Length: 580
Image 1 (cartoon, one colour):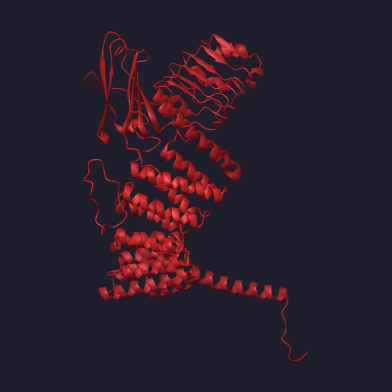
Image 2 (cartoon, rainbow, N blue to C red):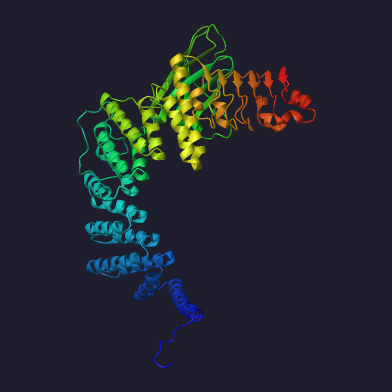
């Protein structure tokens, strides 16, 4: 038995580890208590730095200790000369770097490093960039380091062009570097912004301009180059999502300009409806309504109480101010904050009038493409179709093909787009609901375009498997809407924006909520056959539609309610044609 190494049992090893942990914990708690006691006593000395250093070296995520170190450093700064202060903070930077080796994603470390550099008499930003490069080489998705790098870039005046070259290097070494693609998307609009309509065609920002200044879209020439870069990336690895996301950003449209997109005036209701390009809070925007040259005191309200920010706002005009058909009126909506206004003329004999931009004019659903860009996107579509032949189950490729088709010709490619959505649901069933909602959105956009081309106020989307409703502010002027034979579960509050709606057909859905049928002043007929309306309370919002006279509820569970006819006659006394 002599000379043999004694093998410890598992139980013995665990017990020793437990004792070691207890010993470390006891020492940590003792040091922590000593530090907190010194802080409570207002002691800001070298010993405090030593004690906090001991604790933070093992646990860099103790925010209270970083706060205490800052208090100590600020106190010591008042007692030392400038050169000594420089050495004090440089020593602190070395300590932080050691802590980052323990935890490279410590919130406290990165925040404290940023603070130290702002107090350093002579910060070395080149050194800090080098630190960022080393950290990102170890973990390219360390968002703490990326955030810190943006601070360093801003303070050091590194040019946008240099940072773009930095992303070139990272993407070139690894196409899967999502952080680099994202950073690139923030830099390009600064270095290669899309020129404003009235700007000189050859003007461009200085390459020495620091990042984080502009927020425009990318000019077309650079955009075409970026297509090629992303194209190379996803052909190299079709299943990596980073380049596909970036490509989707490239295909996106610029944010819509804030403007008044439509003004509608009704003599009968003596009401004005105003549609904006984005949801706003009109009560806070200082809107001014001028009727025949005279400012009017009006109260703005959204179409539904639940819509605090809404693209459509309403107001009632003073009684009898426009009711006489023999008079002509001119109305102007001023939006002082955005320095814009919209005029609308209500002519003699007209019961209503409106002034609006079409979805096509606003480039709401697609951007106008130059010949060059169209040809490039067409080539990209062909390339993606070739890739799809090699990778028929690739969801990123399928979704990108859909987006390219919509960028090129949404109506011309509608049939192919629907087929690709069906394939997407099959290859990626986990996200089938998302694809159904996105498909519904595109179908609604296409139908709005068709309606405008036909110059009608009838919106029909029956039997299209719709799962959601969107762009309802674009249907402000619609008088008849058919949503039958879809998969809708509710008519949302935004449905109340359809202020001109007279007839609604929504048979054969699964609608449970009619919340959006609220104060629709012209609504006369509603057909809701074969839905899931269960309770009488689900119909209460219809009582606010004062012109409703025909209601079809056949095939709904609510017909089983006791005394349903008498209950409905009390709830909706003006309805003369009721089908249960």
